Image (cartoon, rainbow, N blue to C red; front, side):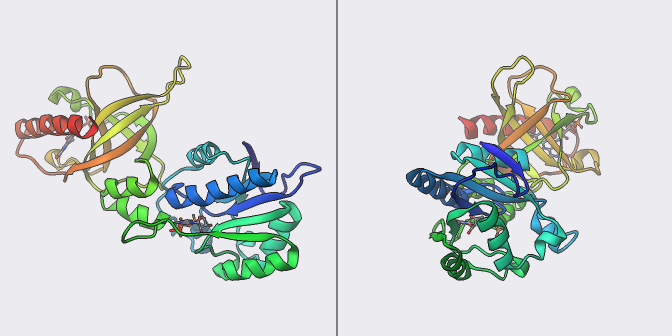
Amino acid sequence: MQRWRGYHGAPVGWGRSVVTIGVFDGIHQGHQTTIGHAVKRARDMGVQSVVVTFDPHPAEVVRAGSHPAVLTEQARKAELIEALGVDVLCVVPFTPDFSRLSPEAFVHDVLVEQLHAALVVVGENFRFGHRAAGDVALLERLGRTFGFAVEAAPLVADADTVYSSTYIRACVAAGDVTAAAAALGRPHRLEGVVVRGDQRGREIGFPTANLLCHRYAAVPADGIYAAWLIRRGGRAGQGAERLPAAVSIGTNPTFSGRERRIEAYVLDFSGDLYGERLALDFVAYLREMRSYDGIEPLVAQIAADVAQTRAALA
Ligand SMILES: Cc1cc2nc3c(=O)[nH]c(=O)nc-3n(C[C@H](O)[C@H](O)[C@H](O)COP(=O)(O)O)c2cc1C
Ligand SMILES: Nc1ncnc2c1ncn2[C@@H]1O[C@H](COP(=O)(O)OP(=O)(O)OP(=O)(O)O)[C@@H](O)[C@H]1O
């Protein structure tokens, strides 16, 4: 997959293309369907498929300080998009100037002049241009003017909800990692670097890897979870390794902690994880974070959490 920064990256002789556009945070099942449809149509037509996405999240530029929690950082998003068979990922810097492009100017400047769109594939609820003024009907009208087709993919939903990044953020924030996984089509992933904690874990018999995440990362609600810890390997060039983990998120009230911690106790593991970049794939919510009357009852509870983690991941 080629990666372009900005939309002026098309090589000389660039032909027509099938384009799909969106923030695509999470690459949830709806995004997968829409992008998958674009890839298939591009192959049928013998042209390149292009995903246009934005960085940073448009909300940050349109309403400063309103950056939503991020489900997938750019690198992870690119990886997931590549896995769908896309030819080109075009990341457009979302600047204040860019945000002021009218729907007509966006279509003319980006889709027609630069990307030579023959077909634009979007979800039925697609909005674009300044103040999100453009919709599918307008895109179709502009397509007739400029000579491209438009296909609107039906929205992917379960019995009650149309899947969207906003919905999945709400699931994660509420600790409902099961609902998040259903919409994503895979567990919600949190990435970060292992930093030092209070070094108490070793003493109580459950050493934990404390994860430092990106400031906008979508961290699940405080509580205890069963998760897979993913080590990318890398060091000796080995592939990724997946280890079962009991994860604790919260301030550790038993010890009157103040900082919100994300800690993973890796089952059946002894080794050093400090400084490693890791990921946690959240599979099940087990219970809320509680304040225990001393170390003994806490340790007994953690042992029970570990047994439950084993069962949840079996
Ligand atoms: C599976 C699991 C469950 C936990 N549950 C709680 C809890 O309910 N209440 C609490 O205060 N701390 C809980 N902890 C966090 C421990 O207090 C914490 O791991 C310990 O203080 C070590 O902290 P450190 O890594 O900073 O040294 C839990 C930890 C794990 C691994
Ligand atoms: N449930 C869905 N089914 C099919 N396509 C979808 C679905 N949700 C979004 N899309 C399409 O995917 C593209 C990218 O969507 P985008 O990331 O902008 O919105 P979203 O997932 O609805 O998130 P948000 O909650 O931020 O609006 C758009 O073309 C959109 O119409």
